[in-house]
Amino acid sequence: MNPILLGVYRHYKGNKYEVTGFAKHSETLEDMVIYKALYGERKTWVRPLSMWENEIEVDGKTVKRFEYEG
Image: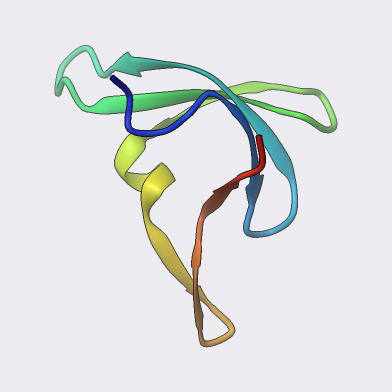
């Protein structure tokens, strides 16, 4: 079971992305998130799951990098 849900997420900077799947890095076996931008050219990206889930500090507040919207 994957630790995050498929669906739409809002990045802390405001843009929306759709998580479409999961993968493993071929050499390190690190868990990766496959996601697509829901704006502009709608490019597909991958990011380590650890980065997807982490919290960051913005203007002195701790926020999630990506917030699930459904």
